[in-house]
Image 1 (cartoon, rainbow, N blue to C red):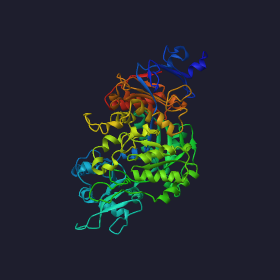
Image 2: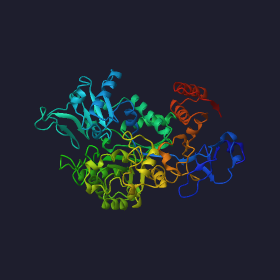
Image 3: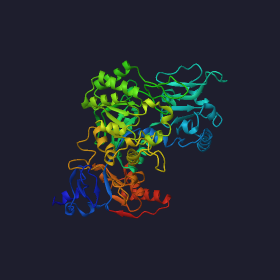
Image 4: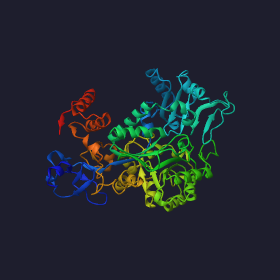
Length: 583
């Protein structure tokens, strides 16, 4: 290590608290910034002379974690919803109408108004087309519930989509209609369950330019939150966008791409095992089996509470059809990621895996696993099923889940601790745009499961995870899910140096309440491309540092002066004056 060449390619991080799971923290880490692999870690005096002074980084005693996995995110859709009407937090239908009115006035040239985030339990009832008509009678409006499984459309949107009294319920979905005794009996109310994207497909598909911008905006948000690997559930046509980002050297995160298997016939999807560069790969596909809990379309074994005493949700496929989908995807070489929220859906999925003789080595994934049973968990263990869970759902759903689920199903609702204790491998994600992609917040929610901002009410304290279990969800768990546990998810010699530095004087590992507010001061992905673009530092707030990294990656400027100008302009707009330091 004495040659100048070797010193130039090595970087030393020291004066750190480097997380080591079961073992004591490391205080320094030496890694090769060309290959991206960790050379050594230690707990005593750091090898200061093994790297050039410019490549020796003192992190001032801050906590260092392995790079975080966002194990279930819709990057493109999340980016698009950032341009939609934000209906989250609306406390009444009148408030929703007010937001729609303001949005319409501010966006008069939009052909369609799309929105996202409403919840009927907060509104007091389901919104209807009449509510939207009184604000936008001539401009088509389509507003998705927070889960994305249900939407409400105004009359203009229904007309353009050809949806009326005589339109039959599509397979796997339902069009809500006014009941008997109503003046519009039999007419659509505007609420569409589970099939909104199919019925309004031609009005929802964005241009390639818009989708590319949306994906890049999503990546910016993920980087700010310490995400270094995304498991991205995407529409088939986005593969080319990701490939372009790789070819242009503008993809700053690892992307484990997951297309929808249902798209395979009408559109080409990446082949199983297909890669592009070091950061983009595809080895699994997504299949839906049921709906969501909020609109009571998740398939459960006992009827939901409420006026419809026979409602057990919706299964998207017959058992034979689901068996066929699983068999076809497996024989085509793909791994499986199957959406199942209700216990009846999980039962159907496990039956299809058993019928298809899907090997444990394939590591099939069931996404959500919100309602289970003892027998289902035992079968998951037998089949080697991974549970992809969303801890951030708990604070949101706990407000109303008891109002819709019968008591018989509550014992294994959001039972993350039970899954882990039952030897089920788990990984954590947000399902953005359902929740925001904030893994540190996900860690916090997995530990505490608070349902209120005052931290007084905990939903099922018996299911709270330890700090290590919660961190594992977003690190080792994510790596295991991608079959990269040999070089991702931990900081060890021979592993990729994907890591984040937390910007908090109080260590959240020791004081886990800090996970709810802790920010990320820097994140690094151990690839040559990323490291070349991380040679300029702005000594100011952590937000500025992350903006520099993102700007460098996504604008693909190789001229440091250009980068400094762009970021300086951003910061001045926010009223801050950065100090530029060239390394």
